[in-house]
Length: 488
Image (cartoon, rainbow, N blue to C red; front, side):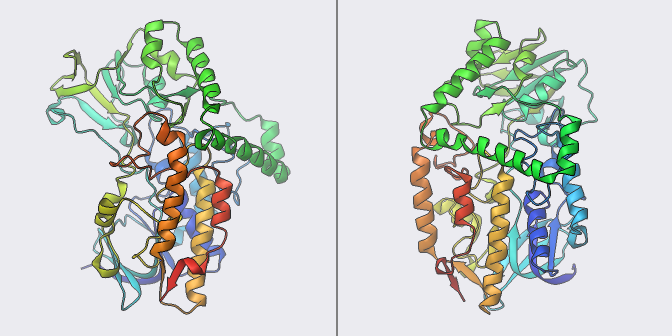
């Protein structure tokens, strides 16, 4: 038997969401909280993804907390190590480390309605009892590896980009890369010069824009450090620049035709072979899947030792990959750039609310539905950060996280101020929120663009993206409306 710990709030995860929540709790004067982290250090996605070339595809000055600006970013788009260092620095600056229980993975959570408490069980046998539970696990943390026939028989090396095997030397090896998403377009250019042969298996071609990535001049870093207002103004400029893209995604798909023209010109400039260009030209509207940015991906595909294969993978044999048209490719290693479980990431949660309702099963039956991506009817005092329908295709999710952590802190305050036991979102408020955003999403490129993406669940419903402007979300989450909740 493990130990029992009682506290006010339990936060799960130490990525941007979990750390942001912990800092917000401290700023509101609370000390009665713990943060559970399954690994031995903070950082979430930015700790786990260490593949070659890993970097952010949102400008650095926007992909950071507004209350903790970093004047020292080395580039306009920061590499993974710098973002991870930033998160560790923030953890120590705001004295959050004392609240973190490392090596503690939550395996289940049960709501006890008589007590008005959540009972959490950790993998090490410990039990945590708290009034409030905040999930900061995000959606990009469970690697998705396709179930390919024969994969278990493969005699070579296999790994996912998120669990990169740095001990395996790729030099002189024949490597299969399966998937052409955001990770693959970053690591393929890095490994292509070292391997003997790289075979890239592409199911769907991504739209790729030039990446305006440059080294931050030292005079700019000095200016940002000595006159912080200049960095704030620069950040605001970047925010509105990114925000303007929401118009095209959500209501003016015609504008995407202009962007598609830019993307095609970018490809034509870097790839002269018309046959390869045809393979790499998407057959759906830009924005339907995540738009990627890169300056070195296309050039990597023109190398003599790189081949792009567009037939699907039929099976894996002991030393090869076989495609649906019967071609066999001998390989020493398979690297999966196949992304993460997103809409089905919540299937892995064992959370039980009122009337013994299991959250994962409830969502499998009824579709993933929340109120503002944060609270769920029937699950009192439970809050999600970066929950369903709060992901973005056009701006920084850190902006969304900051809106949410303020909202959650406000909700906790409301419960305590009202001397209530718990707060439970009214089903009607939740239904109205979902109907409204699904109506908006149906008009957007994610639904109209003619592709199948990780934004959609098994039913084809978009459970991932926030439709439209982030400032609207900020307005909606500025204050908790007590009318949306039952206070018991």
